[in-house]
Length: 132
Image (cartoon, helix red, strand yellow):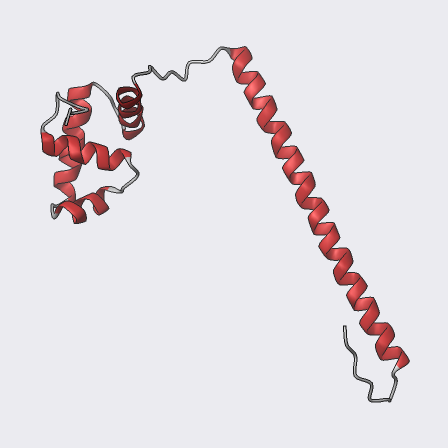
């Protein structure tokens, strides 16, 4: 099997891949039966050898090497503005849909309360079984 990070030791590479997959350092330590400090040191070594500063950059390098594509997050200001606008529209639409659902639930609840009050008023003193 071809290695993804040939510049790292096999043990360090496994730790880096596990970390990129979303496992916490403590979880990796438990799985590998190592101290958490050992995992931290392995990740630090991986960062140094790969010339990166954090786990986010490590995940990007892993994705690039697996896919064979260079991933960049350097968008023009116009592109960032369009993306922000689209996200804002989605947020507004979602909020409006939530408000409509809430109003619908509230009106159903109010209708049920009114129905119960009318039934109680009509049945004053009588033992009437109410069924929905």
